[in-house]
Length: 271
Image (cartoon, rainbow, N blue to C red):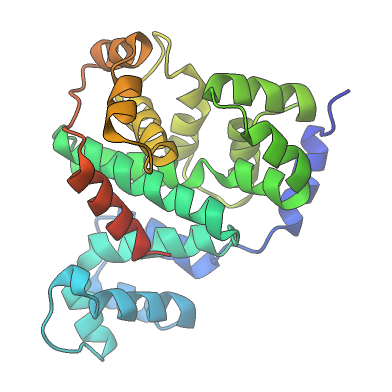
């Protein structure tokens, strides 16, 4: 008999660490094209954690700066709205996912999916959707690992992802993607992001969208990041992956050691 009901998941999600409300407000504020620079500054003043993360990123090597940025005005100007939104996304997600392993997996998949989408010339809004869906889809995995660590670890040993999700559903009544959706609704994550996560289970069917395929390839890269390159290519060249790419009309980006190293390096800046 399945362990969880929908009500159980709702109750367990309330016991997870609280999401940063200011970070979520920042995400929604930046998505509004009418938002001014001053509104961003005023909101940033309300959250020390979010400000500290923006400060760190503004002064990191990732923005290629040669001087230290100190004032909030300087930080907003050097990062820009797009980068601040990414920092807010990760701050919101990290406030919930406090498991280092699950967190790194989430970050890697988000950055890899975004990289693939940009290489395929997705417009910035669709890239943002891919980014958010890839980052937040792991909330269900975190909930299971948080409250049922032993069962989750055992099921996570199943190599095939589809089989793993089926095993989770048999054991818990819901698989991790379904649980992610139920949890995210409590955090007021935009519905268009939840919609992508909801459709992720259909990635190898004719219902798949480009966003789903980008996230799936990113997930494969994350799970195989430490494998020999020939093994990674072998998976990416399987019939079902190639069919998903063909049906959705995307092109495979060249995957090599340099790309994997870059993704790891970029992910590390958010850990």
